[in-house]
Length: 156
Image 1 (cartoon, one colour):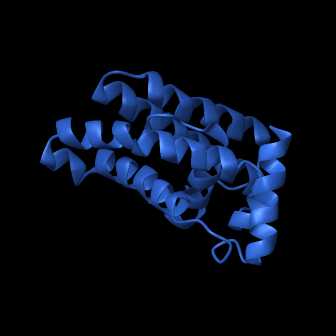
Image 2: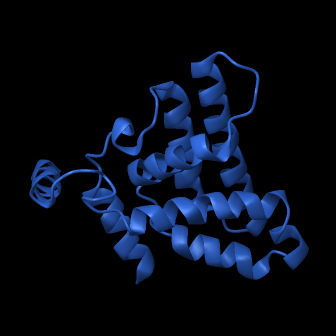
């Protein structure tokens, strides 16, 4: 099952820090709230409820970036996507792949090209990155990467 494999992968990557994903230091309160939004995605049953979780997570990350940078301007995709990657790793969602398939199956084609589609794409992009994460994407040796995973598993 792809969901279970992905959940296990996020659990094994729990040692990853924001700086490994080139994320600036931001408010941990916002990150904790965003993590809860992503976890609620698994429990939500309707497309609208699932989209609401993603929308709340996106808004929270945007606010975290605005707060940390002291600006009123909305954050760009380049800033938000790595944060989604980090939050998904920390949230360990257990049905995120199925949730994205469900949303795309029941969302109207015209909605997929609008703001709802943008939100879905943000999550899919983060999931894809995590699914392909390795020592090279994290700029470390294979030995160090494997050692960190092993140490993390032992500590859990």
